[in-house]
Amino acid sequence: MDIVSHGLWGGVAFGRKSRKDYLLAFLFGIMPDMFSFGILFTTNLLGITVGPKYSNGRPDFASIPEYVSQLYDVTHSLVVFALVFAIVWYWRKKPFWPLAAWGLHILVDIPTHSLEFFATPFLWPFSNYRFDGINWGNPWIFFPNVALLVVAYSAWLIARLKKRKGK
Image 1 (cartoon, helix red, strand yellow):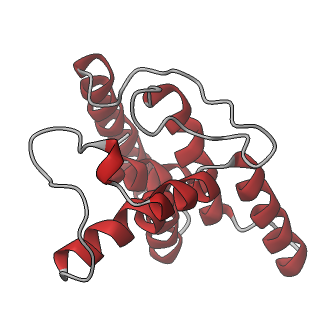
Image 2 (cartoon, rainbow, N blue to C red; image 1 turned 180 degrees about the horizontal axis):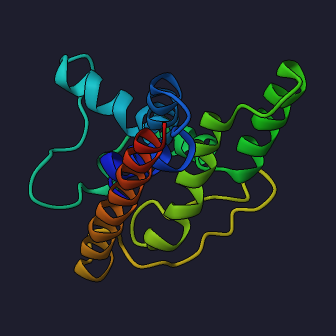
């Protein structure tokens, strides 16, 4: 799924309690991609490294540095997410729900990434199995995602307005 949608889904699913929670959930929703592709994009932009050429399409996989794949494995693993979530829960003595947007990111990526390009290594480091999903750029995935985001945010807005009226 695209990075903006990940943030929006994280926010609406786990950030409805407060503005701070929304911002944190949005950030945790985009974090897995930011810690892999975002670093590459930023270093390319600043001229620090040379990476893939960005154009209308997928970059050549061979032009993407190995560290991107390694970071992708770590940030897109349900095993790593569950471990971090459990540690934070233990440390705080209660769940930190905005962090769950990271797990949602992984769950959404599993069926929306194909084996052709960065399929989701959700069982890493225990298994390298990756599900062959449908690319999120496919219109059958992309447009329903946008429509569902509109529905989710509309429902949230309506609920907030009803709650205000009831006060």
